[in-house]
Amino acid sequence: MGTSYHLDTMIKVDESVCINCGACIRACPGSLINKMDYPVPIENGWDRCIDCGHCVAICPTEAMHQRMMGPEDCGEIDIHLIPKWDRVRQYLISRRSVRGYIRKPIEKEKVLQLLDVARYAPNGANRQVIRWVAVNDPSKVHGVAEMTIEWMKAVKDKNPALYKEANLELFVKPWELGEDHISRGAPCILMACAPKDERTAPPASMIAIHQIQLAAPGLGLGTTFTGSINTACQGYPPLVEMLGLPEGYIPHATCLMGYPAEKYHRVPVRKPVDVKWL
Image (cartoon, rainbow, N blue to C red):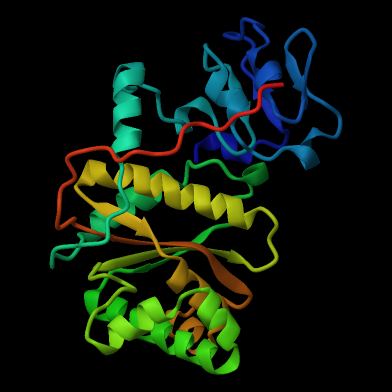
């Protein structure tokens, strides 16, 4: 953070460069900025501000300073690096869930790069509640998969109807034959964790994980969601203890990650768009 971190007001405007364009007023999601001679915070703005930084990011002259950041703290947007529609569409529709990985560990720096990108994913009210658990060791990943199988076997004993409905036999039987359909040979697991009762956590976690999934191919990596591990971590105390999750925290979204063993050459067919226009 820069010196603006110490502001004792929600925002402060450098009047020498402010052109009073009103962009900050229009961008504020809480309508917390009024137009006077120069933009000023509303009376109770301090308690309602979510520190999203939109007012600073949109100011064309670097006049706006917010209590948590100033223009010197924010990275510049390079519009030349933003791809056009044809490239965006091709990239998005060609992304695949990867379920086969080569035996190569992921460099810690690459994991950190992806987690850094995930910080910028949309999240409810900018609460930024996610804490990450990264299992970046193939032997430990295998241990998580093994405990997930143990959880499934426990479900079979305690709730056979659920075991059948969820088709958990599709994981347990191959495991007993030496095939891992849980971690699928991935060397890394990423878990987006948050307090169990945090209302914004489920969508924020899924969006953050998806942001990682979109970014991973840029580093030569593939990913896939894993509902089995995620669900096991929510209700199997031995696995929760093994992962060292903070008290009251659960994973709301989890993915596997590694270097893909195969390369896709075509985009598979999907159902037509189903939309109701109003």
